[in-house]
Length: 262
Image (cartoon, rainbow, N blue to C red; front, side, top):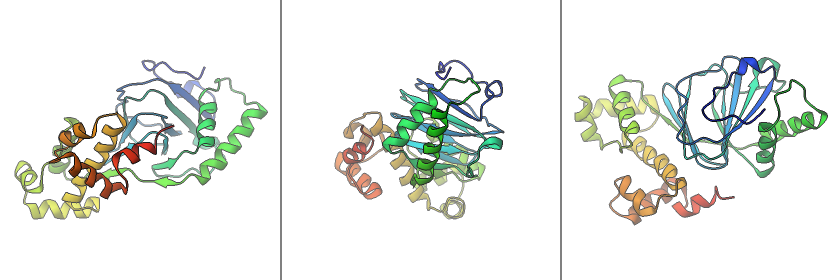
């Protein structure tokens, strides 16, 4: 079997394979924090958004992109309106490829997409046919050529700041301006600015803009209107949101959505 009902757990230890593909249909799923000690994992969804959380990062995975998760990394995956979920697990000790040790988001071309589909529907039968072995070789060839992308937001480790920001994210509220945030946290604007620059590489204002940009991508992919997104993210007008999005991505929101259309 390769299809997994969304409500069923996956017991990797019971499957004696070095490459395990899983296909499922999930919506609004939250895996909770967990880790795979002997398996690295590849996540992919043709539609909808996934978000991966680590102890200090939030990584957005747009549709038609794949996310590599190294073995042993504690992480949590949340899915928003994902219709077709695909995942491949690699038993690190028996994979010939040099797997990376860091999180990576990579592009998925049409050929790689079809290869992922084939692998995720294989039966778990402990044997691989010659055809499947050939598919794996092509998969790794395409994997090595996939372009890296970045949809990563680093959270500061300072508890006062991270807890407050996580609360905003959990409640789907836009983080406030620096002067308001400083009052809520009980720290000076100068202190907050210093911590953000040191731990995230961004000023607080740039971090806040990055947060809004990634949230805008999620809302766009969920088919929200420009007007609703502008209102949700506290923009003064639709045009102000469109100008912001163009500055962040280089294209308008509608053009950006076309990048993920089949």
